[in-house]
Image (cartoon, rainbow, N blue to C red; front, side, top):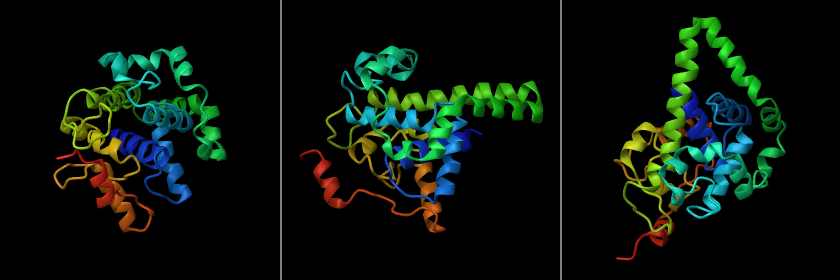
Length: 237
């Protein structure tokens, strides 16, 4: 479930596919991976993508929903519990028209809570209370904190390879935990890129999954930064 919900659901689907449109998938597969993300219990695709796009638009500013300028723990997790502030900063989702016009995502948004309940019931039927503890409790908390580390640790610790004008950092240990998402400065430099680990030694499990899908013809229009775009974002020597 960690790989299914974390890699396929959050990093590949919610983040690189839905938020940034870094590549295209057949609709049936796009919806399947998005549903994997729903089972991570980090919110429905419409709200998750809206918040993330807002973060990139107003990165590290007072309008950033999880700005590190307000402290590590705010950017890590406490922002999620301050609903009033998030609404004031982001307003109602108005940057996800591409998702809102699709009945599948509207249905998930309206029925979100029932899908998590169904997963809990399925796990209980398969293995009783221990499956609930590990499959829901431990797994969800683990994936949550790994996702949050990208918002917090990757804006505090690490190196900047590109002149992004924000606090984003490349953090190798977050990248190992978060299937490649820790190469965060790379991502902020080239938001549209399906590949975050731009160097050969930067391990990016999500990118490897996308490449595998591309190899069998399921992922198309895979976006990568060009040499000219890299030169534009490089620090002056």
